[in-house]
Image 1 (cartoon, rainbow, N blue to C red):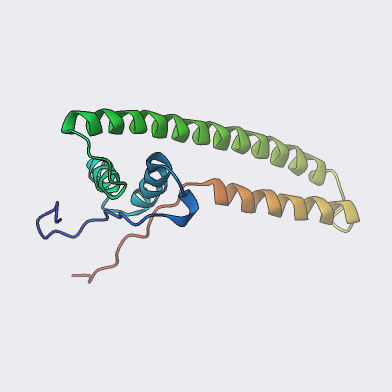
Image 2 (image 1 turned 180 degrees about the vertical axis):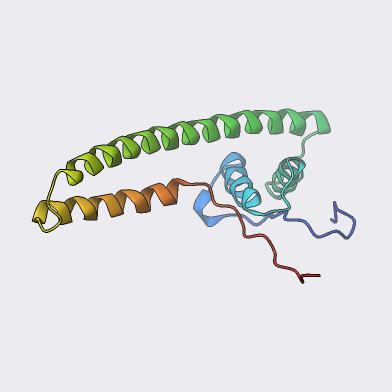
Amino acid sequence: MDHYRGFSHPIVVELSPQARGDLFSQMHCTADKLRLHPAHVPDDDQVAFRMLQRIYGDHLTRAQWLDLFAEWRDLYRARCAAVAAKRRTRLTKLCAERDALFEQRAALSEQSEQHATLTTRLYQIGAELAELEPKFPAAPLGDWV
């Protein structure tokens, strides 16, 4: 069924092998994928949820599946908030460790073995901090006028 009347859009309704079992797990995986697409809009979740709900074969009235969708949305928001809180905690911890290591390293000779060890750990922290940063798709490059 074409919910977007010919317009290209990122609705994905494949069942994920990583989320076996229930509708909510499948929808969590689908919502995560949808958010990676630059054309994602919040209503995509409702369309994808309805499609997945139909794949699962549950014959629900409109009011029933909208209630079920509202429950899923609340769970997903809570899950996202928990992930964001964990990410913020990790960022804070890494930044504090990085600052302490920079101070320790500044007091050492560049030729010392401990300086090299601290530099290696600083590099590891920098790489992890970069991984924790949100990823945004690159802007499409067009022709310059």
